[in-house]
Amino acid sequence: MTQRADVIACCLTFPHAYEDYPFDDPNWTVMRRRDTKRGFAWIFEREGRIWVNLKAQPETVQFWIRVFPACLPAYHMNKTHWFSVILDGSVPEDQLEQMIAESHALCGRQKKHSVK
Figure 1 (cartoon, rainbow, N blue to C red):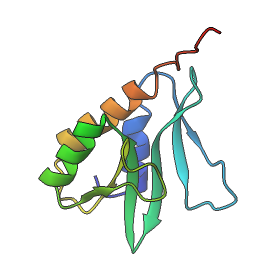
Figure 2: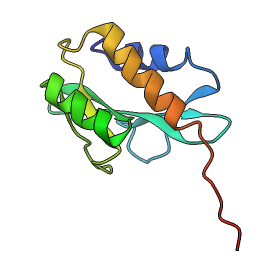
Figure 3: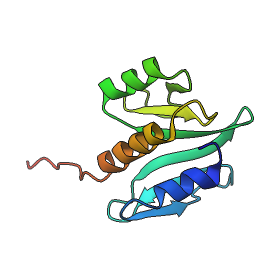
């Protein structure tokens, strides 16, 4: 997967997924869940490549960054819970789909509200 359309198509295979363009900048595509309204994949072009920001558990963020040079601390997002993948073709498609699936699942969880 190296193209924006490929990532969007992959994201749309997950339950409740939809495509959103919330900024005045059409460079940013946000894939969201209808049930929580949360973005699970932030797709953008940077430095001549398509990038995607994905959510993961902190230890998994560090794992992906160690395993793939195309995985970096998240661009413009919390670097503990998010990471960026540069879509240069070096991350196998099945691994990228696994990363997207985990992000989708994590963004489906409702926040716990404390009772006072």
